[in-house]
Length: 348
Ligand code: NAD
Ligand code: DAU
Image 1 (cartoon, rainbow, N blue to C red):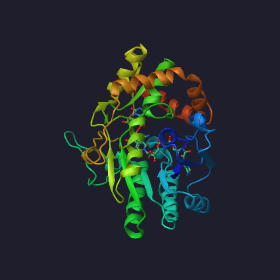
Image 2: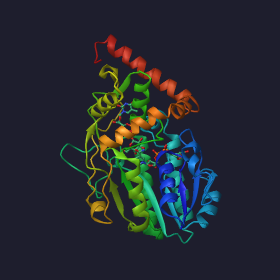
Image 3: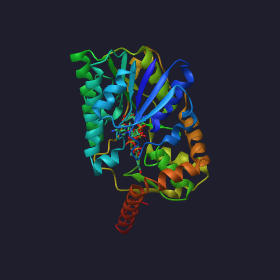
């Protein structure tokens, strides 16, 4: 099968490309990626020489390029997106450009070629916050809180419309928070691990009691691979573990794993419209095609912490390379926030 992967130089996409090449000897993979700040070909260095793999630097909003690549493909797995909520709050324009117009551009091309499958990788954030004691299934209402999740929800709507109107053989997946190697250290787990390694404060938004369903990236990719083969067109699939962890629990666990003091935990100003809890009902995927997360959070977190501790050069290059300007700005903002909270008698 010839598979077009968009955003394959990012965190999840790079794991997925590696999984495809490892588990499907006869596949041909084209990775279309713009290489934004979040795209890093180093994430796929071990695949670069594989004759079944091809990298194309380009934008999913480039209709001509997309049409050409789609015409050579049997299936599409669409990861490319602006993915960070905090950035979407600061500047939402790129989120609507890539996540909405980019998805639209792909769908327009998809309706003109005989594709077998189009997997649209979406997120649990489209459902908005889920009250304690409840779990949301695929029929849940969409109540996105951030520009990021609004753009993802809009792209989901486009996918459903193109499946119904034009028969594009598309399905949608909605996963919880991923973690694992090669995740950009603006995201919570790699951020706190790399801060802890440098004895810097671990910034927790608000009271740190927000709940997430942490999914190891390899478990997520296994589910996507299964759905690429056996998912039903026009369907939506939640992908999660059913486990709940507060951000504070995760931060404490990371500090324990690294033997660092709990005093590094620092409560800072909350994210605007911060969703308190995500909780996915995954009964559909669990029953058919039949998937369950295999990696226990304690084990996955330990391995992830070990990976970041063992790859300081990767973290350094990513943090202090293209990302430096944003990172420094972000970090300073938190420091200032902390100072203001301490002056005002806030938490420490
Ligand atoms: P990421 O930010 O690590 O990677 C995104 C990739 O897309 C990068 O390689 C970037 O260069 C590329 N890209 C961005 N704009 C592009 C464009 N216009 N054209 C071509 N390529 C472009 O993101 P991620 O965390 O790997 O997330 C991948 C997908 O999974 C996203 O669609 C995201 O919404 C979804 N998702 C992520 C999570 C998570 O926890 N990270 C959970 C559920 C769903
Ligand atoms: O739920 C799936 C989503 O998970 C994906 O769709 C997004 O692409 C991905 O970025 C992620 O979004 P989050 O906003 O949940 O991820 P983030 O790593 O930014 O934050 C995780 C939690 O940690 C969230 O409750 C906010 C909190 N947090 C985050 C950062 C960066 C902090 O407390 N401090 C921080 O410095």
